[in-house]
Amino acid sequence: MKILGIESSCDETAASVCIDGRTILSNVVASQIDEHRLYGGVVPEIASRRHAENISWVVKESLLEANCTLDAIDAIAVTYAPGLIGALLVGISFAKGLAMSANKPLIPVHHIAGHICANYITHPDLEPPYLCLVISGGHTHIIEVLDYTHYHVVGRTRDDAAGECFDKVARTLGYEYPGGKHIDNTAKTGNPDAFKLPKPQITDSEYDFSFSGLKTSVINTVHNAEQKGEAISSNDMAASFQAIVAKTLTERTIKAAKALGYKKIAAAGGVSANSGVRAELERACAECGFELYLPELKYCGDNAAMIACQGYFDYLNGKRADESLNAIATLSLDKLCN
Ligand code: KG4
Ligand code: ZN
Image 1 (cartoon, protein in one colour):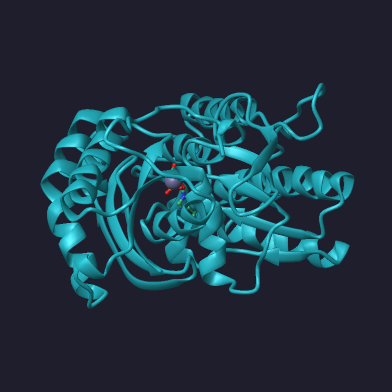
Image 2 (cartoon, rainbow, N blue to C red):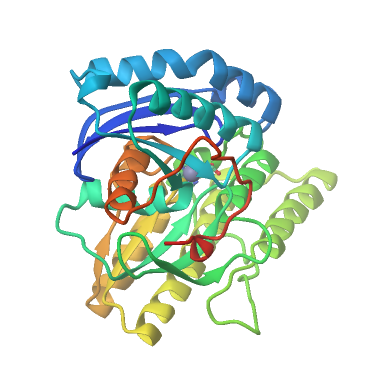
C-alpha cells in the first residue's frame, strides 16, 4: 500500500512516499532553518508563509522521486498535531484538497507518533511493545509503545524539552540556532568532567524530567565568568552539559524499562541524533542486556517519511479524517482516540 505523507508542523516542509509503513520511495525535505536562524528561533508567521510557498513543489518532487503518480497513491497522511497552528494548517489544507480532488482517504497523523515510527524504517525487525525515549525540540517523553497506534506516556519534562535546552545552552555559548548539533560537535573535543553542573532532579516522580535548572546553571556559569573577564572553554562546557543530559535521559529510561518489564528500548526525535546520548544509551543497554533501536540520522529530525509510515499503521487501525480536519497545537499521544 502506497501512502503519501505530508509534514509541516514546524520549520520543515516535507513530503514522502512510503510502502507498507517500512519502505521509503522518496523523502523530500525543504528546510527553512537558514531564514529562522537570523531571528534565533522559529518565527511562526514566516514558517507558515514558507510552507505555503514550498508545499506544492515538495509534494510534486516526492511523487517524482518515487516514480509514482497521484493515481498510484492509496492514501494521504498528514501531520495534524502537535505543532505551530499556522504551519500545520498549510499541510492539512493541502492534503485535504489533494485527498478530495483525487478521491483518496485522508489519514491524520500525530507528529510524535511519526517520530517513533522512524524506527520502523531503520529497523525492519522492530515490533511493539517497547519503550521509547522521545527527545525533540518540543518534547521529552518516555513512552510505552503498546502497539503501532497505542501509547502510554510514562514520563515527561516539567519545563524545557531536551532540544530546547540544547538550543538555549548553545546560544549562551555563542552558537547559531538550532544549536544542538553545534554542542554535539564541540563536545567531541571537550572534557565532560571540567564543570560540575547540577544533575536534573525530580523528587516526586521517577520518570519525569526537568532541565531548566541545568540550563540556568550553565547560563550563570558562563555569565559570571564573562563578568570576571575569565575565559570559559566552550568545548569543556558543551561536553559537561551533554554528558549530564545524556546520563539523565538514559538513567530514567532504563529505570522505567526495568520497572515496566521492557527489554527493547528505542529513541526518537531530533536529539536522538546526538552522539553523546546515543553512546550513553548504547552503553547502558549493553550493560543491562537490552535491545536498543536508534533511527538513522536522516530520520531523527522532522521529515515526512515518518508521517507516511505512521499513516500506514493508522490506516490499518481505521483512522480517517474528513474535510473538517483541523490543526491542534498541543495533544498528548495517550489522548489519541482509536
Ligand atoms: O525533532 P525535531 O527535528 O523537531 C521537533 O519536533 O522539535 O528536533 C529539533 C531539535 C532541536 O532542538 C535541535 O537542536 C535538536 O533537535 N538536535 C540536536 C542534534 N540534532 C538536532 N540536539 C543535540 N544534538 C544533535 N546532534
Ligand atoms: Zn519533530
